[in-house]
Amino acid sequence: MASRTVSKDIITLRGSASIVSEFFGYAANSILYNRGIYPEESFSKVKKYGLTLLLTQDDGVKSFISGLTSQLSEWLEAGKLQRVVLVIMSKATSEVLERWNFNIETDAEVVEKGVIKEKSDKEIMREIQAIMRQIASCITYLPCLDEACVFDVLAYTDKDTTVPMAWVESDAKLINNPQMVKLHSFDTKIHKVDTIVSYKNDEWEDEE
Image (cartoon, rainbow, N blue to C red; front, side, top):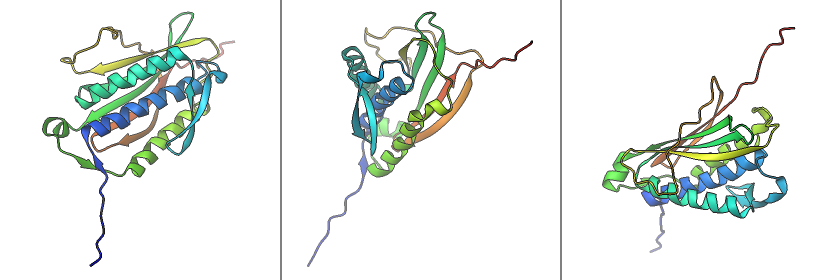
C-alpha cells in the first residue's frame, strides 16, 4: 500500500528568533545602502528573500551588524526584546534625522510553555519581501539626506534583561514633530514585527 509523508511548517521559538534577527541584519544593510550612509561601492549584491539585496563590505560595519543580530536573537529567544530602532543622525551636529522603528510583539505562551506554531516559510518570506521592497523604494517617500550621516541602533528590552557591557544606556534620540510612514509587517506566529519610519519634517512656508 502506497503511503505519503505530509510535512508541516513548524516554527519554534529559536527558529523564529533566528528569522527575525536575520531580517534585522538585512534590513539594516538595506537602510544604510538606500539612505546613502556609506558609499555605494562599499556594498555587494546578494540574493535573499527572492530579491537582490546589498550587504556592506566595510569590516567595521559588518562586525557591528553581526554582533547586533547575535544579541537580538538571544533577547528574542528569551522574549525580552520589545523594539529595535535604527537611528540616522547628522555627522556634524548629531541631530536625529530618521528613526526606523521595528516594534516586536512576542507570544508569551510560546516563551513560557515552549509551544510550537505553524506557518509556511514561503508566507513569512513574502511578508519580509514586501518590507524589503518598501525600504528599497524609500527615496520615493523620504526626504533627501544631503549631508554626511552616521547611524546607531537602540534596543528596548524588558527591565530585568541582562545587558552586555558593549551596550550602554541611551536617550531615545527622538525627532520633534516627525512625519511618519508605516511599512508592512511580518509575523512568524511567535514574533510579530511592525515597521514605522519617522523623519524630520523640513517643510516650511516662504514668508516673503
